[in-house]
Amino acid sequence: MRRTFLTPFDRSAITAMISRMDDAIDQMQKTSGAVELYSITEFDPEMLSMADLIVEGTALTTEAMPLLRNISANAPRLHQLTARLVELEGDADKLNFTGLKKLYETHGKTDPTRFFIGNELYRHLEKVCDKLEDVANQIDGLVIDHA
View 1: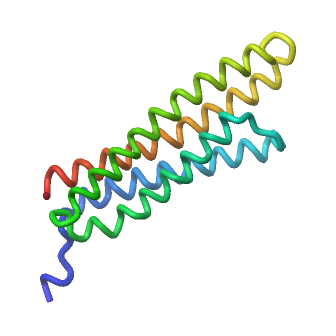
View 2: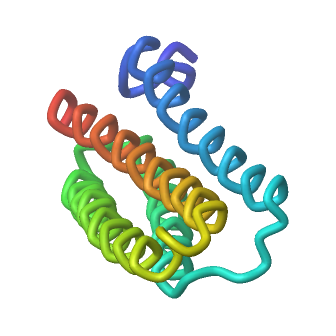
């Protein structure tokens, strides 16, 4: 019975993982809140690409969670998943820079309100990707400690 209910890692690691995942979800909600607040109906191509990265990142995170039940056996796959999550965050940084530059060049001087709203949305999208990278780092820490 004791074996059945023991987790492969300690309670503080579980709490930290839940906290990182909650931060990512909270940021996703803030992003959708900004879309609703500003009634955004059109998105720059870079914003759409960042959203695609977020969808991929959440799918990778979803795949990783059950693999944590047996970290030793699943360490190679967990490493692949976390490496991809980190890569996604880097891709999001590039899209964020490119999108903001285009946004400024197009609307920065002529339509400051549109620039402000777009800038805020880019900031939210980038933060979601940062939070998913935090989840990846937490998973990596577990793999290092327990594999």
